Amino acid sequence: MEEGLTKRSRMSRRVFLRRMGTGVVSVSVAGVTRISWSQAAAAEIKRGSSAIGITYYASPAGGGNGRSPGSPFKIAGFWAVAKPGDTLVLLDGRYAADDSKITPPEKLSGEPARPITIRALHDGKVELDGEGVRRTVNLFFNDYFILEGFNAHGAYGRRDHASTVQLSRSNHCIVRRVCAWDAQDGNTEVFGTHGHGDHNLFEDCAGWGIARKVYQNSQGGDYTTYRRCLAIWQGCHAVGPKMGFSMFYNSRGIVAENCIALWNGTRMKETHQAMANDGKPFADWSTGPKGPHTYTNYGVDQPYGCFSADANRKIGPTKGPYLYGCMAFALKSHRIVRIPGLFYMPCKQEDGFLENCAALVEEGAASLRPFYLSKIKARGLTAVGDAEPSLGGAQVENLLRATGAEGRAAWAAMLRKEPPDRGAHLYYRYENGKLTGQPLWPWPMNQRIKELIGLDVTTTLMRLGVS
Image 1: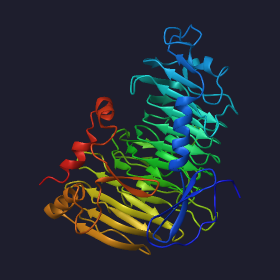
Image 2: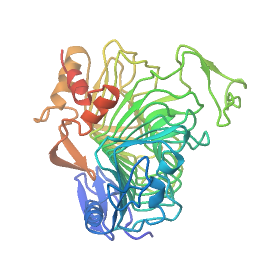
Image 3: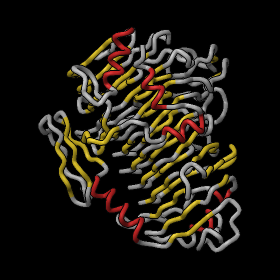
C-alpha cells in the first residue's frame, strides 16, 4: 500500500481526524472514511517554499538571467535551472508566446518539503493567454508543484486535451488563487487532473467560459480536493456530459469544500451540431438514429448539472464523492436548459456524503430539481425552488425544502452566523472535512472575479435571500 495511506473503515458519525504516515489525514464522517489532503503536509510545503531554494523572475519579454526583477528571463528559461525548493516569480503582464507557458519538462518535480513554486508577483496581474493556438498550463509527470495567483485562458491543443489548467500524472500539487477560462471547445475542462495524478489541491480558484466541464478529475485523478472554488458553466458544443464540477469519473476520494457552481449557458450557439473529438459532427450515437444531431434554441447535449459525475468503476470500498458546505444556483436571467438537478449525484455505491449543502432555483427560472441524489448519505440540506428534490435511495437527515418567500428566508438564514433550526448552515469554512471557526464570507476571490467578469459573488448570494 502507498506510503501515507491506510485501510478505509467504518467509523462513528462524528468527524475524526488522524495523522498518518507522511501527513495524509484520514477523515471519517457519517460512517465513511476517506483520505484527504493533510494540514500537516500543507504546512510542511508552506515552510519549504519560503525557506529553501533560489528565487527566479520571469517577464513576458524576458532577456535577462532571471536572478532579479530587473533581469528577468522568460518562463521557459526556468526549466533548465529549476530544482526542488526553487520559486519562479512572474512579473506583471500578458504572457502570450510558446516560451511563456507553464509546461515544465517531464519528470521535473519538487519534493514534499521543497516544492517548486510558480507564482504571480501580484495576484491577478499576470495573464497567460493561449490565444487559441497553444497550451497555457500543463503539468505532465511533475510532482510537488505550487501554482499561484495568475489568470489563464485561451488554451489549444488536441480537441480532447486542450484544457486551460491541466495536471496529468502529476501528484501532490497545489493550484491556488488562479482564475481560468475558455478551454478549447471540445472534450475539455478549465481545471483538470487526470491519469493517476493524485492528491492534488485546487484552492480559491474560479473557472468559467467554454469547456465541457469546469472542474474534472478522471481516469485515476484520485483524492483531488476542490476548496472554495467557483464554477460557471457557460457553453460547449462537443458531444458528452456537461457539468460544473465532475465529482467522479473513474476516480475516488474526491472532495469539494465550500464550492459554488451555477449554470449559465450564455456561450451556447442558438443552433449547432454536437461535435466529435475530430472536429466533425458526432454520428455514432449509442441509442436512437445514427447521424449528426442538430440542437436548436441554445440546446445542450447531455447537460448534467452544477455538481455531478460521470462513470465510475469498482475500485475499492470507498469511492465518494464528499461535498461539504457547497452551493449551486440557477438564476432567471441565465440561459437554463433542463438538467436532472443542480446537484446530480447518481452514485452507484452508498459511500458518498454531503453536509451543509444548498441549492436554489430562482423564481421565474426554468423548473429544475435542486437535488437529484441516489445511493448517497447527506446531512443538512437546503433546497429552494418549485421542483421537488429526487432522493431515490439516498439517506438524508435534516432536509429543508421551501419555495417563494419562505425559500428566500431560508436561504438568508443559512448564510448568517447563527445556525438555522433546519437545513444547511453556510457561514463557516471547511478544511479537510472539518468545519472550522473561520468565516466564509466575503468570498475570498470576490474582487478578482468582479474585476474580470463583473460578478459580485458575495452580493449575488446574499441577495437571493432578499424578499
